[in-house]
Image (tube, rainbow, N blue to C red; front, side):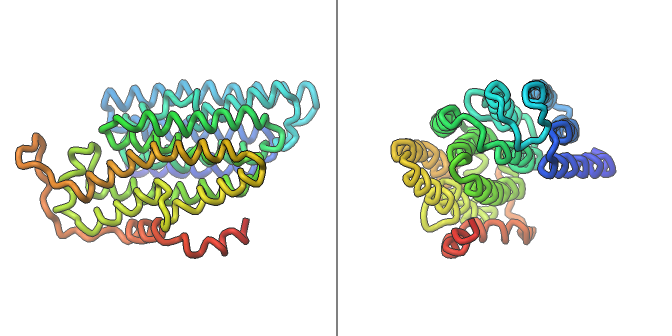
Length: 346
């Protein structure tokens, strides 16, 4: 892709995100979401591969439907209450339609069907954008309207997302699909707590984005898209593979790594809200995710490939690891000791 075109699309992406998260009016928020969608589409389809074109088409149709629902929800609310302010969404029908729209935007169950397919059809860098920065505007809208949404509906969608994200990731061999189901599972954790403690949702999102960025950049550096390719990377970049192992375990939420912090705080908050059953359900369902993270980590670091592999061996190169990957992987593994400081901030 032309560097100037890529720069324009990246700036548009950042501008659309900024417009949505900083707006108070529904039409401005909707315009930001549309700019976001139109900016990411050329980045998804830039390889001109049929799978990439299919992914871009699926993404466009889903996001267009979700944006129409956002506009319909805000217009219905304005019709009944005369309010276009995002925080003044009070009409029950509008709240229900908006929950549906944001679930479609994020890829929450039962509107998750597009996300694994789109991520599989995209490159690793575009997949990183889809998993992190593209989730920020819908989460910001969810944050601003959280006090008026239906808690039972959100809790049900959250537990189903955690269950299905873990369950569907078990038998995958494509790394991008595994990370897509991982994203769906993490979104379940973020959604369940948004009504009771919205700042915890943002903390969870920031730490998830940090760890996912580290994983995607590492995979992009070693050029691994399948589990079978991942098995050959230990001989190529042993230090990077070891850090990938820790980052994946951090994403799974194992102590004493960074990923344990949001899960611990969310379970604590749910218990305070007399939702011990939901906390237990989420804790048990996170074991499903732990299995496929361990599988990824096992393939990356512990398994040596058999001598009769069907794919080309990767040469050992002396190319230095990017400093951004080094910083991100280190932070993804070592933030837990400062959790008392983070707790005081929320």
